[in-house]
Image (cartoon, rainbow, N blue to C red; front, side, top):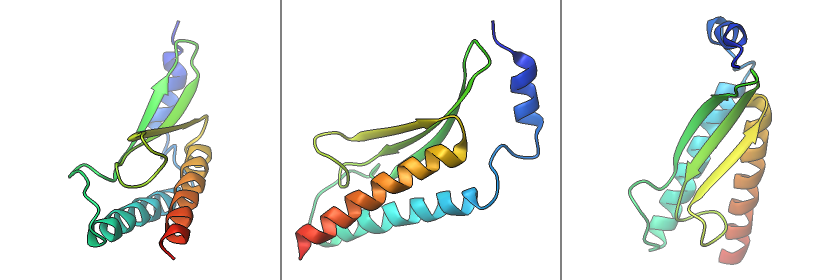
Amino acid sequence: MTDYGAVERLLKSETPIRGNDWLRFRLLREKVQEEVERKHRNGEPGKMSDGQISVKIFFGNDGEVRWHIWLYCYLIGPQPQRQYVWEAATFSEVLDKAIACVNAWIEEANAEDV
């Protein structure tokens, strides 16, 4: 059974996203967009939806909260995958995971371009 009290407390809290995590998320989004634009300038075809990022909160029946960051992108990331999902118990943790992956992908792509 869902613990609606825990869900309500989370939603009524000032924000479940703490510190500079919103800024970090915005910077992640900008980094993805810049890389997508760079790939387009280099002549790589893509989709209009490349670089779309969303944040989702899942409330389990046991009251557990899980944060997800979803990235839809044809131009960066391991091929042939097009959708990437990271999951963690807090927004900060899931953001750390997404940032680490995206940074590694961009670093690898830049090394290949040299």
